[in-house]
Length: 202
Image 1 (cartoon, helix red, strand yellow):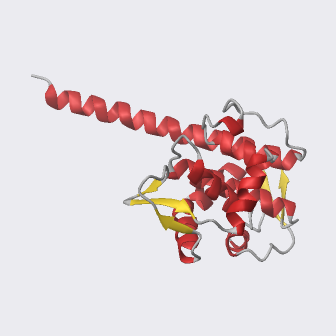
Image 2 (spheres, helix red, strand yellow):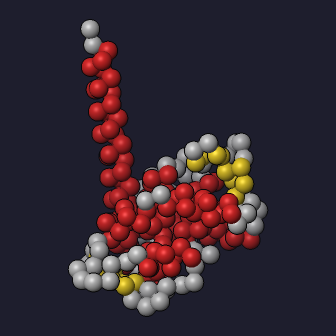
């Protein structure tokens, strides 16, 4: 299973709810990290350079197929936004189809009208083991989501456990993208509040 698959499963069990947009950006980052690990891409500065064949995973193959192969190659942050669009919903659908997710009334991560929980499978145990072992990539990606879960430390932007410069660059880009998304949310909330006040004014 991929890091993105494990990240999605872990996100279901986090104490603090995770937004679909934030999770989608982190999933895209997880895919890119797995592609780096497989030698399917390389990072040159802030750009993604396609390399060898991707792993057999369906989502990783789709991610690799969408890479820009002509120079100048795509910036990591731009790719996160493009690849991340509705990515959490795509993983949700795939995991439901494979029987790894089921509806549950008291779950913490809700997609639309559905509240979901992972089924007790070997894949879930594998993800849980990586999380319990504080595997550096998973820990860094969950920290990028801004959660306060105990297993992720203090929720700070700590990538000290990462031993690959390219992976560190990707994780930092995920942090920046999630922060940018939150800034957009806050700006829209302020604009909506201001608009509502205009209509309420005497």
